Amino acid sequence: MTSSLAPSGKSCALLRLVVGLWIMRLCLAAIPAFSGADAAAPVQLEFFWAKDCPHCEAVKDLIQMFQKNYHIKVKDVDVDTQKGYKEFVRVGQRFRKDPPAVPLIVIGGQVLMGEAEIKANLEQKIDAVIHRGQVSRGAATRQKKKASSGPQKAAQKKTAPSSGNAEAQPGKMRVTSDE
Image 1 (cartoon, rainbow, N blue to C red):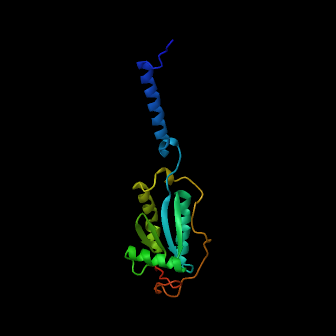
Image 2: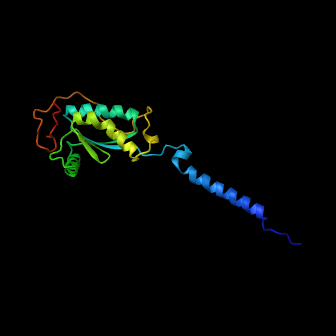
Image 3: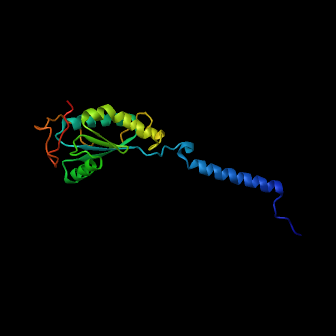
């Protein structure tokens, strides 16, 4: 006795439909917007600062405030260290800031230098990065969240250096006078 193992036309069409829907479901699950996962990258920000810079301390406080409202990852660069200073000089050359001054922020391929410029423009730059699609809107919603990264030293009141135009070298950074 022989039996027919071949599916009928209706069974074959139904099988194709089920397999197609299953594959579509797998593809959609891989997309964060459909899976409910918030896997988007945070807004990346490089913050160059010096220890004895009161303007840098004010900007650190501002960054920490924005970290409560945005998904921001901060790369802190202490320009008083040899490694930090070299990176600071490279960034200054790349953005044609000669000499560069602290505080300095790089965000979205642009640079903000000086406390006044940073305070006036940082939030707009964060929003611009989000709206250009460099990070997803889901990752940058204005919901309260823990800061994932940021300045590691507590803000301390410091005195201004004696000269606002110190030569750009470790320990003697030029500090912008926002007055």
